[in-house]
Length: 566
Image 1 (cartoon, rainbow, N blue to C red):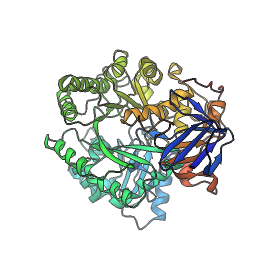
Image 2: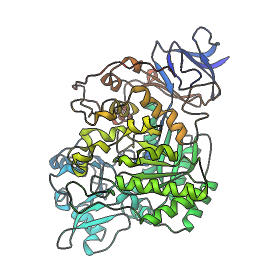
Image 3: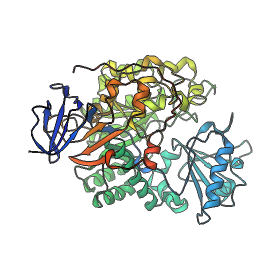
Image 4: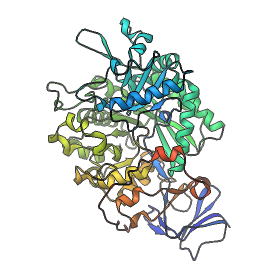
């Protein structure tokens, strides 16, 4: 007898031997039946799905659990003017006299027109230091009190970023290269000493909040892409306390300037780290460059609006190649951040050298973001067996108009987030949210992949890279499983596979893109355990609101999606 049976469903399995089914049965932690509703065995628990879609559980291949919402910080999501930023920060300062620092999250780069934000923009709200992170975590914005408290105004360096200075040599209050520096051992230690938002307890609460949101969003496996060795214990604690509602694959962060001995430390950390079917450590996170918005990603040619400037690689070319080759030799899979076309080429060259030097063929190294891809490098992903871990939502005009678009220039827009081109070339493309940079709900990413439009549906660009619903779902399931060496038991609905399943609130294949965006995960199952059941939840929560941003007044044209046959 089955433990659980989902029946009368429209089941997309991503198993070539049986692409579609009507029912899925579970015994223990594994799938025990896939087939017709009429032939399904009896079960202790039967859920009739009334024709809604059932798929493998979502694998979010780049999701910063550690960057979840902080309840003691002001959220600047949706704040589109300096006045609104100041209002929200002032409100937190007024309501929380107990806080030594006033922290805020999710500022956008374009909040002040035609210039960088500076300390004066935040002054006059409170006598306390103010610490603001950008939505992508790559820059920090400080007020004058914070510059003083951190010693920056006195000329002291900080280990978690690079303070910008004006023409007179005075710090402006803007700090770049934050996230690449903040997650080093020295950077994290300094942040935990100085900035309350980075205390271990607040970081742990972020993990738990992110995991709850993941379960509500249909996500059954999360790849946390940047875990400092010093924070392995936070995930160990979540495992011991039974709080891992999703599987977690944690990539350990390798600072680009770390000595060779650090790679042995990584091996020791992985060997000694706790493991279970819910938690695995092992991939290694690297940076080839930074990000395009503040002109710090490495470009092959000048930025369109900064002649003579191409950004910079995170390390000299030879150094990254050396690191990747050594990690490959030690058996590590790498997950390398690269956004500019120069950074992407650097990462490709490093991986190609590692494979040639070591004779390795199936490490399944990944390059994450792949935002601006030179045409000459397109086929190299397929030829080298490299996963492109990409975020469809990042290509939405409402996020990048006025920053990314202007910096790259219209003559290079055809290089932007080439999801379809990579897929059709035969490369492996694993889709993801990049939470908290983007919304966690995979339906937001799927909508973005189907439209290349903002969430209001009013503008679409680079339409040649639009993909189908089936391609998008494959990118969030089967392709994600392949990327992380889990394709024999995750990302597929077949007998013997892990019972990681999501039942959606409608048949997504029968809807246009706007209709897809309106749906939600009805049921999320991880290893046979129901971790989210919308029918048992009265109303929504702050996690539902955070995971998906909807504009109910939008208009979006589209058509129902044809069903694939394999």
